[in-house]
Image (cartoon, rainbow over all chains, first blue to last red; front, side, top):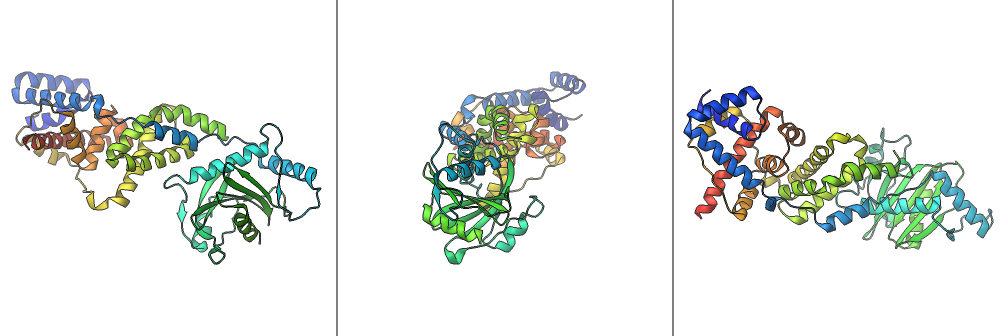
Length: 249
Length: 171
């Protein structure tokens, strides 16, 4: 080997990546070649200069905290539990016949599966607002967004743009909610992003609309046309209900 | 996989390597603000796909995600500043046979500036090797390179870095 080849191998040698035979060969060369011996000295000096702690950036606490917040466990049980418990509270409050009535249900003591579900939906919404995370397919064209879900889900969500009604379709993505993969449709009302999580409903029959306010977010659940829609936004109840009604049509 | 399991996986496999993830994102982006965007997006991606991470490979798995996220970001936001480099051992051997460069030490700030000024492929290789201490095999996985190319890329990166340090010290 000539010195030029040796000098490339010196890097592997300094990095402890050469096999034993090569290393021996190199060491014997270094004993007889002062120029190459100088090179390995420089190389080691450079490595130790780069290895100093001052050059390593540590994750700022703000980044760590933000990350922990956004992945906080949306622990919840099966979605069926949600509607059962919603129906239970609804029947307690109004009786089962009150169709198309908005209800704000009182919370039972301790976290119920419905509680955890709603927390999970809010966590999913908050997660989606992190940079670059809102959409996997960004388009206001329903004919682009709808086919994007093909083959990614075991159902076909209905995707419509409601721009004339003031709800602009922004795009869609896959998300994970309540133990299953769901379609997430993203709309925007003025500056408010809205996530609409969609998955097949437990029952074919349409249900009334359930609304809940929590931590500044509005969450609406409704089952219609065989699909469950869960809307989450910081938008007010009235306007979010408008979108829920549009989706149900 | 339930959400709690997903969370537990993430805590165990990814959280211990958050500094490494940040360090790589920070060196590739060049400032805290862009590094935060890249690192956050990468970590959310890691969270979603943590089920596909093998226990023994948490660090290089995460670093590969950070690296890919950073490159997409760079291509989108700084494409005019990206230059492509050739990976070619012969170029490298020629490089090394030209006048030998020497290095005996440098001021931390000079070193930092010189490293920041390198083409991003070289900077990435040096950060992974010298600051994160990855093996050639791990660098190959993270940077999506053939293992055989890692050594020559490091050699060229070090050569350029030494030259850059020298230039900065002269100024």
